[in-house]
Length: 148
Image (tube, rainbow, N blue to C red; front, side):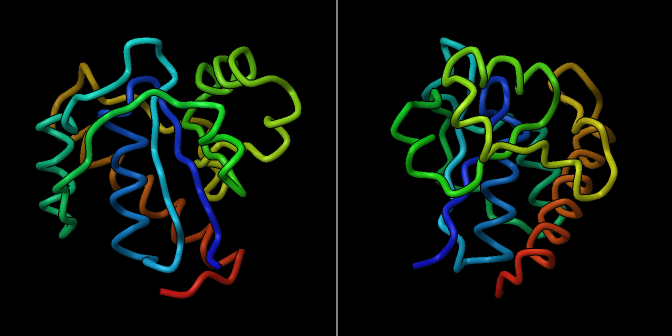
């Protein structure tokens, strides 16, 4: 059985959704989910500008809809990745200190303090976020010896 990875961000319409899409495309042996930490996360399609940035980088964005993180998701995952300090705090507030032991900032693999939320930014920020997430996932996969 492959590694199980959960990606989290605020609303699951940009960063964590992109991380799920990129991981599924690059490392199909990894079981992956994504979810949002805010209370009303759920049911939305990935942001149009994020889909465009992912499509232009060669990723298929079909079939991803936002959803709220659950206790079951956290228990299911071998590793949990969040995008910034705000996500970390919200994760600990919702799920406690114990699950936080298997949670990490995704950008740490490439020396980035946070993967910025592009929601209120222009197209270039969406492309930058895709590049940061992709580089982080590739470095994480290299460290853990994940196969494509």
